[in-house]
Length: 306
Image 1 (tube, rainbow, N blue to C red):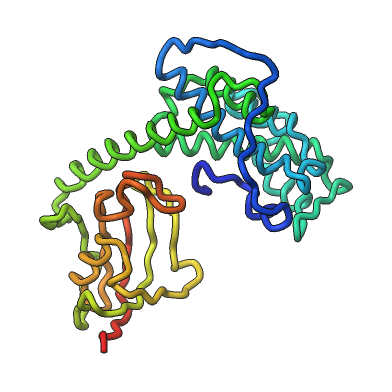
Image 2: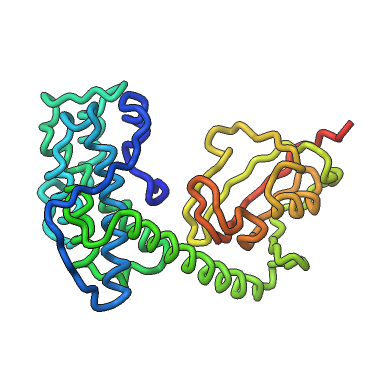
């Protein structure tokens, strides 16, 4: 699954559409709406944030003629409501393969634009739901308000709250969830017999003891690794490419610095890192603020500091 709230096709079109900048949502008329609860408001904000991000990708000068925003909306809404889908969900990958060609070119003779757009909407809905499930909030989100936010965001008109306010609400809410979920995960994880915990709060398991030397903090190391969120979603790995990474230990996050010097060359460990040992209160790229992380690391080689 691609990481949230990233968009499914952004890498396909960003090269030919230039750097997309957020444009203000258009206000057609003033709308006053009173949310009855925080749950309603945050559900609306999540939907607005995600759908407006989709709007910015599929309404650029290069992409707006290739996709039908109304059908993207329809696909998202049908998926989120659990309605009968106009196109089988499992057919979406085949649709993408036939419609989306190299360099952002589309083939409307192979697949009608309305079908490709609907399939993209289903995929956007799938990605959104996946992010809610990963955070453990899929059962508490107000679906009606989530869909209202999606409709307002994809149309780029008439938001109940401003985009800036919505994104601030979402960022603050997700940060709070990340902190709470991370603390609970690490507390429960520490009770496992196979998990060791250091004074800093770093947790680790030993899958395989190495038989070589241990690195110093000043050394450079060659490693294979896989990084995951605590819900198991993978965000980075060297394993599929079979190309290990050479890293200077003075330049990596604190959890890596502390953990790798515990390893012998040839060893394979799993590290569980609280956010203070990972990317902290700011996050980095797909890693949001306050995220606890899990890394599987195999230490292949050490290059000593000269």
